Length: 270
Image (cartoon, rainbow, N blue to C red; front, side, top):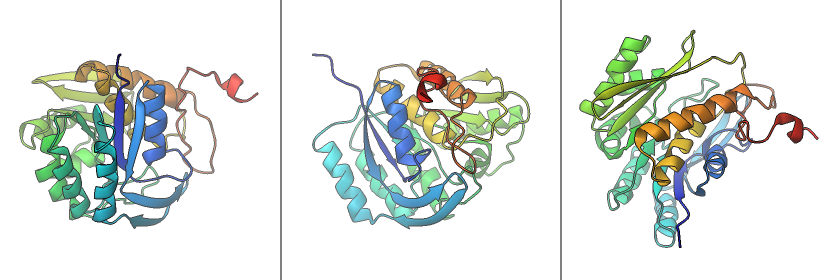
């Protein structure tokens, strides 16, 4: 019997459903993978910002990971907000036991601009976590933090991607250029080659959860056995559609449309 692709997300929550664990599970489903989750932090947040954060204890995080791995082995893992050094180390120690593709979305700041991660966590992420990654998916600001460099142009995005792979030890890096003024250009560096993924920019403020959704889609496609290049290419198409067909809900930066174009909006509105 063929096995159902299974993906585990290790991340924080979003009670309004646009980002974090909730967005990851939606993306897994749309990309035809079975989703599981281990919660690192519970957030009170919505489309206007983050109101409160409470982190899980490392014991509870470990217990969640044990529950998953003891019963249903993932085919890929995606991580989002892991806000403390101890939680990162707990995650690293678990993932080192298994040969699984890991997609790291190094979440540090929400779409609203709220900081989500403690500063001292950065060095632990760089030195201990990134070497486990099949793909790291920073936006331009996150890439700048990870590489301690300026990342504002395509050339600087390329350089940051190479640093994340060649110096920090990840297998591949996808530096996202969604904050550029021109077309949305993401740059993938894998197996010594640079690849550009361009998409037209959609004039919308409804981009909450874009990074979570993209990295979750990549993880789901890796779980299905696709190469890193194809996983990124197909996931870029998916998130482009999700942004281009916004649901227009929420008072702030609303969520992307996790259905993409699979379910036309006129059917959703009936």
